[in-house]
Amino acid sequence: MNYVFTGPESSGKSTLALEMSKITNGRYVAEYAREYISKLNREYTQEDLLIIAKKQYALQEEAKQNADKNICFDTDLLTIKIWSEFKYGTCDEWILDRLYSNSNSFYILCKPDFPWEYDELRENPNDREELFKLYESELQKYNFPYKIASGTLDERVNDFTQRSSL
Image 1 (cartoon, rainbow, N blue to C red):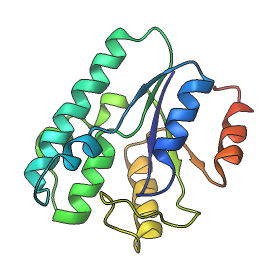
Image 2: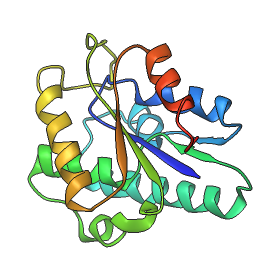
Image 3: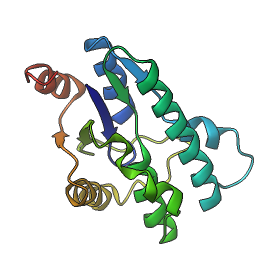
Image 4: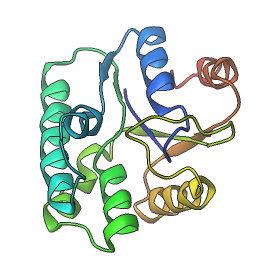
């Protein structure tokens, strides 16, 4: 089974994805945006989002081809679509054309129900609840199966490990 961890900034996606990859003995696929943006010596642009999307897609497809176990994706193209539209008002067609590439995955929508933590790559501490609703709306729009993860890391892990789908 493949899992995609999604949601607003500072909602515990990376932490939960990494923990769930350990628990399910799965492969963890990191969010490429963090690596890419941390190396820029300037503000990122919408064109950078397409570069990020293409690399994230390549990493995800490579993981699917080489995995004989669960995969935990710390984001996917849906996140890049949402962020592009939220920040720039549009999204590149290349991203839109590949949105269903993880449609057979189970999405875990991380709720921002704990304090925002500063990180030099994060930029939106005030709109997390609005973004959460946007993520949920998009998951419903594309009919992607999902579950909301809320509470502490232990509560989130316990919630999912008690379910037969893991």
